[in-house]
Amino acid sequence: MNEVLSASVKVQVATHFLQQHSRPEENVWAFAYTISISNNSTETIQLLRRHWVITDTNNSVEEVKGDGVIGQQPYILPGTSYEYSSGARLQTPAGDMHGSYTMQTSQGDEFEVPIPLFILASPHVLN
Image 1 (cartoon, rainbow, N blue to C red):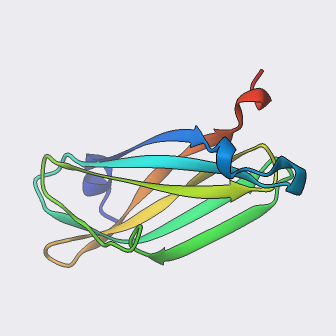
Image 2 (tube, rainbow, N blue to C red):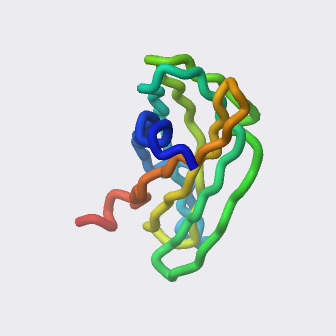
């Protein structure tokens, strides 16, 4: 793993509870999240794959692996950011997500970028 490049790519997350898509009576809580990936390196990188670990408050774990994000494998130029939004459903009103992106340099070298742990929670859970 290229630690220097990995440290030069920053991932930020914002979350939002989707009340209109949630059905608590059926144990479905829906959340949206927006990810911003900033390339602070001097190299163009491409996001190849994602790996998510999604855990609800019942300690039920779902792993999601796949190519790209939202059907794309974007290139991120030096000094720029890529932003996308997606969503997750939990069987409890709260949980968390974390994971990693597999990136590739223009020379074909792959490296992992960690996605920091973030919380998904419906508003009344945190009161």
